[in-house]
Length: 379
Image (cartoon, rainbow, N blue to C red; front, side):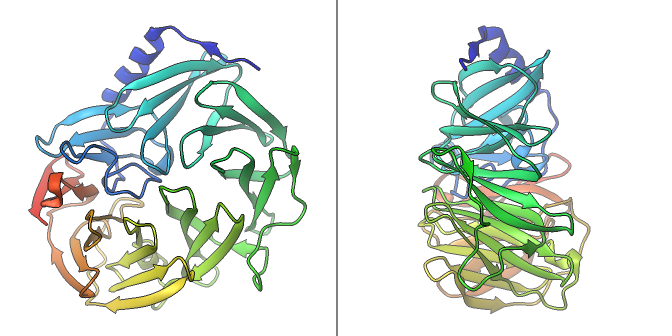
């Protein structure tokens, strides 16, 4: 099926809609699921903030001036931090657009017949997965704008992502008892692999609520924070996209109070070898060695008060040398020295936070408050 190119007015309308949108409520220096230090050039650092997480609209704040530099409508970022894609209703069709995250520039725009939702983006931004009710899925090549696969599945399926090579579609199948399994669809053979994916020794059926996540820029990992509401346990669902293998890694969960577990913030090291899971409400920073897929270090500190915070407001940012991890449970700031294994904080910010990130040269940390004020602190 060939996509139909739209006129330039589509780009202008989409950009205007984005810039008129109010400030968002989630960000860590780059849009979800990006886990790099920033999607923008080091000399012009932006703080990217999304209202509803990975699928919401996005605003880029200039950390030098505190002003909004540019914005996008609701969409999804690629894991490598280079691309942002949007999908919006356009009559009976769907208007799609491809943007550069670092500059805010629109690269292309086209329409897809029918009404679709953008459900997933491959780590490099090449492949888009769009879905609509009755689990109908279309895979689109974002470079050529053509639809390369169409499929329909029986059951309750949710798109996780598409592999970098465009040959595998990863899905979450939601079961009637509230549990889920990870499924693989072979796009080359146009078939759903019969057995759910599972690590050796683990059950193929799991339970939990997906809360937040990050992706490695190299396309290897999709890392999701899950909250097991049956056992009041937090864990990381680590999906190895190259080996098509999922694994659950338990996190320190204290007394298991759900409101405290929600304050976990995930952040990858710059080399994507270590995942940091920091929770000020529990007073713990856990380091996960992704080569061994287990927690290798736990640093305890005095837990902070469980202050009111925006939904999914916990987030973190890390310096380019990987030395300084700054995180929040939604309001105050803590800093973790990854070499000395030492936590400092809290630093009071005076209100709920919507996002944070390092500025140019990693000399300062910028935090956007819910009232629209951009705060700046020495790193």
